[in-house]
Amino acid sequence: MLRFTLVLMLAAGLALVLGLSGRSRETTPALTPAPPSAAANAAADARMGRPPAAAAAADDSLRGTGVDGGLTLNAAGKAVPDRAMRRLFDYFLTRLGERSPATIRDDLRRHLQPRVGAAVLAQVLAWFDAYVALERESAALGASGDLSADLQRRRELRRRRLGATVAQAWYGEDERRLEHAIARQALQRDRGLAPAQRATRLRELDAAYGLDLDATRTEGDTVALAMRQSARFEAEGAAPERRYAEREAAFGREAAQRLGELDLRRAQWNRRVAAYRVARSQVLADRGLSAAQRQARLAALLAPFDARERLRIEALTRND
Image (cartoon, rainbow, N blue to C red):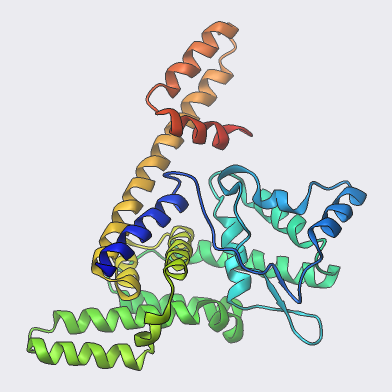
């Protein structure tokens, strides 16, 4: 029953992040040490003629969500490239497809500018640029069908582009989980093992990776992890077999299958949106249409979408 409940929660949580309904995000501290108060930030924005910092998270599909991740400062006041920073980057990059990379970068800058000094801001934006470039390069690697080989290629690329320290901080946990998933799959496919032997080996493997401690994870933590994981998969262009392996290791087989189905639904949605954008652009560019004709054709393009989908379409194309 607990596993069934978890699957439903993961499906619901991922439905949010995949754009199948409204979106939700885990809220974590935006900065360590604590950031200025909301009132102070608003005052700073007003003095400098900027939109409120919260606006970075208040438009498009992230409207009404809390910014996930944040910055950690060391004793010298410099930013630490840790997992929280990467979650912050992922949070803003969730809007890829809705906004351009340059606009997303500017959103991140506006979010951080009232909170950190110029030197820290420049360093964080440089890391953001490196992160985006690396994710693109990782996606270009494609998939060979050999999960172990693909993992090794990405591990080497990350350390070559970022250095060992940053690569380990940002990707070490993901790599560890994928290693665990690959080893687990190998045990499950080993027909030379009796069921009791396989169960024992699996328990030993889980314990060796420390994943037997994950029972302490709350349901909210699990949904937030699945949402971040799916956003990362999209950014990297991860192959279906890799997605399944990591999800099975983290959440179990049934949840992995359900989340794979949600991936397919998102891909279908994105194709529909892309086709709508092309057709809409053609209608808007046709100078031979009267205003009434243009409105009629635009309405016809929206007809295949239901009421909730139309709201999302309008939000996605508002700035086209």
